[in-house]
Image (cartoon, rainbow, N blue to C red; front, top):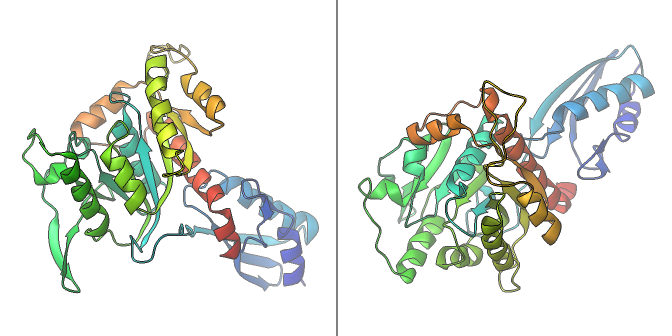
Length: 354
């Protein structure tokens, strides 16, 4: 007869490689039941985008077979529970994590990285929203092939916007409220006011992650975001060349200012290389090599991945049609898993108290 206590002892030898504690201590084992030699339980991960899922399942089975009973029949139901980041009461109460995507300059593919990060997290099973905070140059309508105004509803006497849904995502952009190609000619205070509305007057519902596509630079929206939103962390986007790195440094320096002080989850290097379809063994580094890694070394940051220069991505960006089952999307899925991993590590104390 297999004893529950023996199974728990075995599982207490399995450590989450990121959180550096065993699964039992972390509260990741639930609903353990024994029926003869049949062992079943639920493994609760800290994110549906966990890159260690298969490894942890295998380690649990091995521990039970080796330490408890080699004839055990093991059934593991893998699920996830994203732990909410701490925040001021009443601000985005149902959004567990707000992740800003920033760059020091335009033209590095920040909006495409924001969109693919949100799409990849959704593909991996998370509930995700995407806020286009680039007021002057909104890209989300084009990236998703959507051009419709958000619905307005009244909740407890207050009018709120309802995000537009597409590709399993909840989307909001100033571009949904203007004619295609219409310029937004606003001064700084108007920009800040609009962004505050996007934070306080939108019914986002239950979300694991809200991705905020920031405008390039270090201006009003970035400062307002830091002051108004419960920001979990920042993803910095660069391309390999020195000019992009110089501007990325400005973005990093801003979020590290004492008056702002927001965690930087890491750096994504976009347009890292080009590999022709007819020569998959070749790699052409069109804009230089190793810039993102260099930035991470300089600031002691995490490297979140290299994203290739692929014509398919350009086509998807123009048409709003995305398919994450295609092989060329693998680097974007890997990037999303690494971002989710860094969020889980950052929230380890909350996970322990879980």
